[in-house]
Image 1 (cartoon, rainbow over the protein chains, first blue to last red):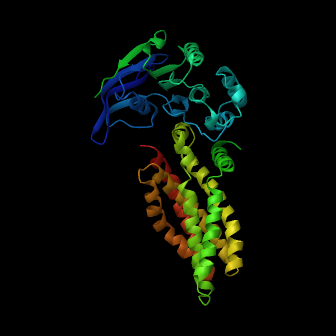
Image 2: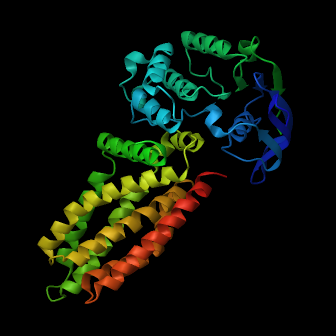
Length: 201
Length: 213
């Protein structure tokens, strides 16, 4: 894989038992690029993103990501957080595991930026869906990933939150590579360098 | 503390914090082990002798640990937190070891209640019996944390955990009862120690394959 290409998928397929979820998906994504993945419900967007971050493996085809998992950030359908821990405790745990330098400062900065500083000592189970999504974004950005994989990141966010996310993504454009699955592709027009439309397999 | 052991400590501390907050596991374990010993106290005939009572102690401890292990991975399943841990750049065996340390703390707390209660209801425990409990607890938690992770990932988790764990716990019961009643407890303690080492290494090495495809 050339230096510029960060992700290369060739004929990727994924089945769960007899049910094929992804069929013959191929694309390349260069460093600093942004691939916007669209498709109806059940077209395999979430599955493709889970394959990309290594939470699942293709049934057929090859999927090469030229990064180790320390450099990946992922926001999925679930927040990947502990509901009984506070926002601060969650980020502190993941910050430790990711060896984030100056962890406390970085956590404080992200919580401030995403409007969660006041709620930092509240348990996640007391958060609204939108607040939980904001915290999931903080977790994914905590270690400054080179590849950010986002599964419908605007879902559950209010207008302010969605605008904040757009602003954040634009500030990272060029230095970070993105794969974003969305039902609102127009939001990502300025960011997108490539598009992948999945159909039902 | 940094590096691998720092990750283990952070993960174990997280489990202790979750338990202190939610109190889902430890109170149930404490009540269960006490209730079981009380039931055994009344169920065991007066002339059954101490040797039968030692066997029942091990039944109580194994089933109490099973109760705790059944809930061990629930916080990780609730909001996809296990995926978050699997994606983190830490060695995945640290996730298992952190869970094992936390499970050991819960089982140890249950034993702090169970052992005095056993002495009160049945018979005193000597040093070899206590050493047997200590070694057995390590084995129970090492194997149990792996098996409960496997069970948590499957549809029939409530059934799978006891079906897989209880056969694997038979050597622990044999060793523990032997250490409690034998005239030569050393060989049973050695057996328990060997079990701990072998199964801890196997669980440590196998965990990655349990949580990844």
